[in-house]
Amino acid sequence: MSMVQRKTSTVSVDLSIPVQADLVVLARLAAATVASRAGFGVEDIEDLRLAVEELCLSLVGSREDGRLHLNYECEGDAITVNCWYEAEIAANGSRGTDTDDLSLRILDALVDEHGHELRDGRPSAWLCKRRTDGG
Amino acid sequence: MTDEARSAGEDTKALFFELAANRDPAIRDRLVTVHLGLAHQLARRYANRGEPYEDLVQVASLAIVKSVDRFDPDRGVEFTTFATRTVIGELKRHFRDKGWAVRAPRRVQELYLELGKITETLAQELGRSPTVGELATATGATEEAVLEALEAGQGYRTSSIDATDRNEETLASHIGGDDASLDTVEDRELLAPAIAKLAPREQLILQLRFAHGLTQSEIAARVGISQMHVSRLLAASLERLRKSVTEANREAAAERNEHREVEHGDASQQLDRVAEEQPQTEEEERRAG
Image (cartoon, rainbow over all chains, first blue to last red; front, side, top):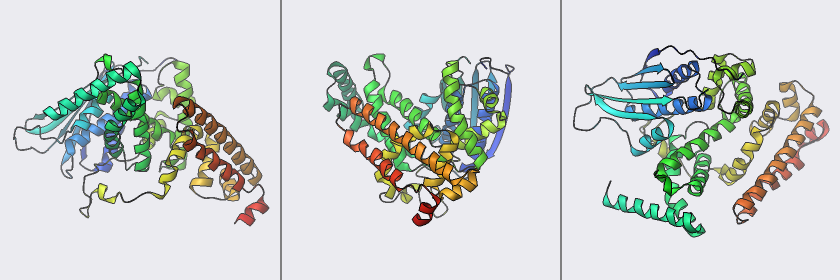
């Protein structure tokens, strides 16, 4: 029971979902599955789930159209999630996201690193979560 | 950051140093009050998942009190960062403990309840959080089923409180007056950890009796045991809950220097009333309707 079966090879998963609140479950499940495969503990997996949800919410805000793209990469003890909203936002100096202080605080609490930026005119965000308990 | 916000932040920091130096209850109260807004913000973020918003506010507010008590201003971390971590941890635990609020198929609910207990046992055994694979081995379920059950425990969706629905109304506008069950929030919060410690079948029986309002005979048919057995299990479960609540009251009283002991005494009294109202035989049950 004390041995953790880990699949240590690098894995990359892409997911594309319509912007609908009830489909964010897919983004969470994909994160949980990748993390589970890499031997993350359930506490870490719960954190990752909530963080991915927060990441999606911060990009989508109150929008109800378009698609959200997510890429999950697992390498060694770390999972990186890149997320971007497909529509281009008029560059007006802002990041084009609805990221508020609360979102940033929540992400600070849940993951090791995260960031938001406007990439090629598209709102995008990323996070990185490392396995904490050495499973 | 505005000058005003910076100044408020510095004031708060000074108060934390003062609290660390003299543990003044008035300063503690003030710091808790100042940060209750954060509890409300986070509770709103995780509302709409099958748990009453008021319950989440209660959980988050208690987490703010814990954060104020545990915060060490010398460590150079912002209080809000520290508190956010604590509040989210408590909210996660709350959702995990509330297996019976989950709207999911029964087999998923049962696995979820079982996982709650096994996770705790394995965490103690292993000295770390168990993996999904370890939970699957321990429960005899597949990893996929474990992931499904864990997802069910997270609620099924999230939504911004200010987002509008198809009728152009915000979720916030649907939060009306006082919830009729608001008065019992503290009691339920006190009972949740005790309920989580019961065996999955006992939790299910309590759920069917008090959340779904089934009679003992209906529960007996559903669970596949006799009505008398249901009656005995209910009585035993209520007795265990009563003991847990009494113990929690004692701890809470010690922690709060007996300031608020009277408030939580209500949960124990409610359990006494519930136990008295339980029909013990089929005849009594028929009479009770």
